[in-house]
Image (cartoon, rainbow, N blue to C red; front, side, top):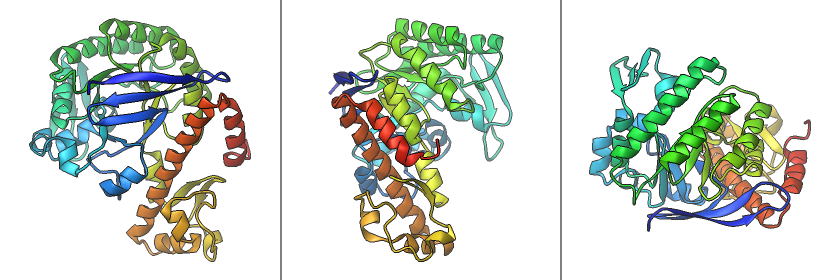
Length: 372
């Protein structure tokens, strides 16, 4: 099946919408949160578990898989799917964010980016064409254009040069994309805090004509109010009939506010990263399970959650696992956090369908963020 997107409902109370994305390996409802499987693994979980805590689509990281084991080896397995034994849907990022955030020495030029391996220091080079070729080999259903993600507060002149270069790179990437029927290539909107540059970015990307559009360069150090203001500004500028993907966002408030502003797809390492350090997302807000408060707590992690972790284990046991540095604790809280976000997205979709997303936001925030 070729890639397609259909909108199923617009919320009468907000600017949110529900929809369905169809890919060659299945379909998923939007708005959706996609767990991050950086190195062909969602950390600590097996694919059968990932299936239980996701809506069938996960993320792979182009930069990391290019370096280790190499996209040629992944391709020999039949792509990421065959490599990690995942039979669901996949999205890969472009590698651009890691190139710009992880390397200590880099040189950006029109051809691409020279940089150093974040571990070995080895000199490397990636061009827009390289990024697309690697992603073709990784075999995801949705892939990203190679872009630069400058610091949010970079000066205007630099940001303008960066936006224009990213637009040129997007054109070059599309020209070498080998499997447009099987892999939907998204353009990435950049421009930092400058609305005119954001507008220029989306207008030029629309001319290139991508099947979907990502919003990059947000949730990178700016305030939440700045991010929400930019999402509200971009919403009417983006094609209404194409999916919108907000990159690197995964806290509950950002997911709800993103949906209110017309976003369809989200991803973030947040739920898995904080889980490995003992922080759980619950219906009553975040809790740090390592705290002594839970030493003799015989209640479940979240009494309103029906995942197997909450139905099986006590807070006392989970705290014991973390205090004893047992890996099972990381696995169980990771599973729960992703399940929590899967359920949250289901609630968001239902609230949209019932034309009450703003009411849902008020109700959710009162419980999850009682001190706001």
